[in-house]
Length: 228
Image (tube, rainbow, N blue to C red):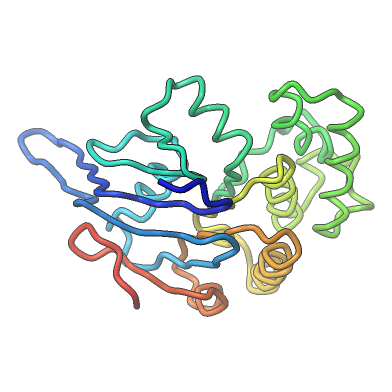
């Protein structure tokens, strides 16, 4: 596997879950390649396995079989510690529920992944402030999470997902809890940051407006990804 910068390759990925005597086959020998800077929307009915795909792709959940190469490295051949390191350095996550820490302010929340990785506090603070400015929250950095609107909280979550300069942002229903205006604002931000940072973007969404902004739309069908 060539060490292609920014490239993500899924080879023969399978994932199933057992419920009682029933086995649910979510992903079946799935093959897919994502190139640097691509914007991909994963759409489809609830329960089809979109979030499972994102979790497996991001190193949060092991597949039953198959390989995932991130910049040429088969992540599931590595130790859990090394997978966690790759997840921290190369993959940004943004979820429907922002999972911010309410006892901390915006900039402190954004700093967390950088501090966890061992980067010094001064550098972490500077980068956190830079990304909060990028998402339009330069005047809200010192506000506690509970003092921010839903749209502002999701912008903080986006800044936190980007602070480690990941090669890919995985977003699971990123505007699912937002009103129309805040959704549109986040959509625009995702597009702008994709261009500015040359970052790959993979979005699971039921929002067809967001999906239409992507370069490619795919859905899970019989365990494989097919173009919409």
